[in-house]
Length: 592
Ligand SMILES: *[C@@H]1O[C@H](CO)[C@@H](O)[C@H](O)[C@H]1NC(C)=O
Ligand SMILES: *[C@@H]1O[C@H](CO)[C@@H](O)[C@H](O)[C@H]1NC(C)=O
Ligand SMILES: *[C@@H]1O[C@H](CO)[C@@H](O)[C@H](O)[C@H]1NC(C)=O
Ligand SMILES: *[C@@H]1O[C@H](CO)[C@@H](O)[C@H](O)[C@H]1NC(C)=O
Ligand SMILES: *[C@@H]1O[C@H](CO)[C@@H](O)[C@H](O)[C@H]1NC(C)=O
Ligand SMILES: *[C@@H]1O[C@H](CO)[C@@H](O)[C@H](O)[C@H]1NC(C)=O
Ligand SMILES: *[C@@H]1O[C@H](CO)[C@@H](O)[C@H](O)[C@H]1NC(C)=O
Ligand SMILES: *[C@@H]1O[C@H](CO)[C@@H](O)[C@H](O)[C@H]1NC(C)=O
Image (cartoon, rainbow, N blue to C red):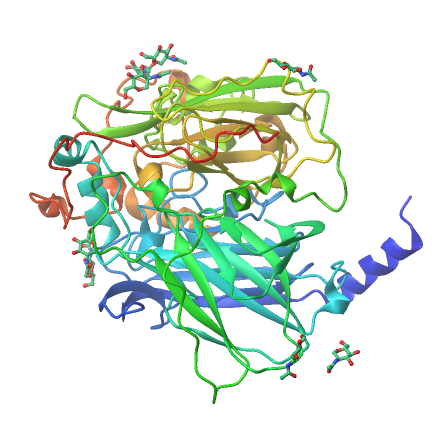
């Protein structure tokens, strides 16, 4: 039975809920956030892109018009579960067709969660070129709401001077494999609020809620405020017990809300510093002049000088361990666990000499029909059969109500921020980095016994080089649930897979696919029916011709001519150019 208070709260929500409509023309604009002018993907002629601001209970409608002329687009609302609205999730060829130039597409969904999220392009690495922004959901009942005087959104991100399609083609080229062992492009700069030297006006003796979002595509960031501590109160949309830190470590796509108390008196200004975690870059390709730092300012008094920015951040190993952020609701480990899924993460060269990422030796290649449409059109007796989704999407079918553990072992020396769509998951076990040159640490058989009483819950987790994690979630959100590394280079390299979550229940939901979604498929001749190869009728199980190699067009580009012949500005290791991912493993303790 609902309590009186819950009923009252629901009534208040019902009265105040509103529809927020955004009309977005996605187009090329010029941007120079670090002083280097380049084309960027903006909205309505502007970059940085706008934020989505909503209250819990609102309906958000985003009408996207693709004015890019030469690239497709698609938008994902990161961390939004899309319960009952999987067709609005955004990843191209998973829950929708990409939106071609000249076409419009409407996203329309209810906001049932609270906290700090973001939105970004989910096709061809496009968010690296600028198509990204905060998504903030206010909650009148948030545990800290009475205490806060003012709220400030603070994004950190990495930024490139070259455009993503070009960099992807370079990254996935045999040339890069030969010269640099398949190294990822290293960003040129770090940004705060898509700029540098940003001033945040601060009044004395106030409580500020900073909503921190890493909107970058590769580097984790260390963030600190000069002489101001941060009280963490939210992690990826989950309220947490208040925990004070002096440095915050934010992997790509992760978010935190922190309370910062301003000084009682304003005798000086203070620096805000963010720094890329250079451990994530391959040795031998880090440009000698790379500046991983960006500075912003807590400005109490514009007439006073700005203090010098610290020359470097002192990486505090403890700041990397997010297990200390305990959910306020003290949710116990879910159980009993009905399914354990081992996932081995690895990189290796394919027959085209491309550096491909994989789960269990399978590198993702997009199907010919968006996977959601395969699930919606399949006969009831086949919808639970993973074969119809194509073996190169690595489909795993999950049954409604199952409690699933993903046992993820990282055979790669680099750290990876893994993101599960549609859920926040419990972190049941997690190691620090394993031995520098492998083999990876082994997940203890009794990991469940050592689980924390109230495990960290979030939607993106960094798994360290040659380390592991076990994450747990309940199958309660019918739809196609993408799981992938949030390093954009690795998405394009195939470090992606799909869970086909409760497909029988999905078919019964009666999802309405809006006309704009059908139109963009029709315009490109993409089928909305059939298996991963677009076959139906008597041929649902016929997957012949399933590609085993990535298609260059998957990289959002119409630029085969731009296949690089020289490597952009890299700094080959003269001693051993093929050396890959040899770096100091700083954090070797087991954390759970
Ligand atoms: C600071 O603010 C608190 C209330 O938030 C108030 O009680 C206190 O007097 C203030 N102190 C100063 C020095 O303004
Ligand atoms: C400013 O406040 C601090 C305590 O927050 C105090 O130690 C210091 O003396 C104050 N300075 C001035 C100039 O009032
Ligand atoms: C990981 O990939 C390497 C090649 O890069 C290969 O030698 C190794 O056997 C692979 N390990 C697993 C567990 O797949
Ligand atoms: C992946 O490949 C490696 C190396 O070839 C092999 O040892 C391992 O058994 C394979 N794993 C799976 C899940 O197929
Ligand atoms: C789990 O197993 C490890 C050895 O793998 C052992 O050291 C530890 O005590 C065990 N923990 C529990 C709670 O059984
Ligand atoms: C995937 O299926 C295709 C078509 O049936 C087949 O050619 C290919 O060998 C399969 N690949 C794997 C890794 O099973
Ligand atoms: C698309 O056009 C923009 C603006 O002219 C240009 O900067 C960009 O490189 C082009 N992209 C591709 C993939 O050709
Ligand atoms: C940006 O990075 C690329 C790749 O490392 C490099 O080629 C280019 O020279 C850099 N640009 C600047 C201005 O540092």
